[in-house]
Image (cartoon, rainbow, N blue to C red; front, side):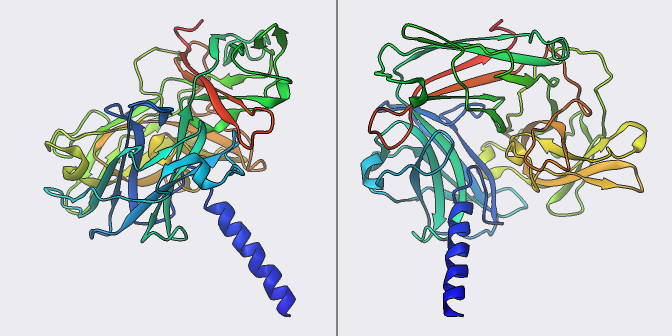
Length: 423
């Protein structure tokens, strides 16, 4: 019995350790509105150039309403976001843990919360190697009290990446998908085999459908060409929907009504219809990014209101999609397919609904479906939004190298392209 108990305990501990390594995951029910971005630009990925003077902004709210002792640390990861087998003292200069000392209790807002912020990296806790990092925030200097994790990339540019977006040659995908092809000049790297490099491509900051495991189709001297016909093909989708929630007093055109008799306020977004049969029309969107802002306050970070925002999606003929789950995708749901983004079907009304507690701001989102029988399958906007080759999307290419005898994947190249420009 003792042996069985020890085995079970080890399994639970390993599962707990694995769960705490999940990127972009919130573990505390009190934590809301976690944002990590390049300084002064909320619509950017958390990428920091190694040894540069650039800074990243971290913001989050604690809705418990009372200040707490939050700490943070960095964990070096490989290209697939598994922990790297590197000692923490080898990839962090200075202290391995730092306290978040800058916070402010909300004011002018009916919802009480404490807003925390910090500029990263700080001089006494700085990444020393390039690669993928997991920013971990936890309570009372105890890493077992994990509050949330956030992805962060440290770039040490050693290669040039050239990319373009094309239509696939496959007639079945020609008008609905986009293909990314790119080449990498590895002259500055000592590459003995293509197996020591890795490339990852994501669309609109979405890691749920990232394309990895790519192999170069051609090698011309020091140039690796990734242009396989089916290697890097994405559903094109359609321009993202939006919800302007910068004010609960002056309602935008996407807000149906606001119930101010309840705190936090109840905000009802106008029902969204299927768009898969509508003609494609280009308009400027934000590709799933959110911006925390308020027209009712001078500082949106600690003076903005919170509200329960109700989203409604109306399927064709008010009938549910057979064998499919519907998800609300965007930065507001972490750009993840899971319980936080899954919508529920209301049989009485014949609609899908989702309620999220959101801070005042501008939100960009889309609806996607995924097969119930394939819980790890890729999501697709074909039924809800439609796929159109002309859609404007943003693609980011990450290129990693693991030198001979190295113990982790170094991020040595990166490129961001726009589908309407890079053609």
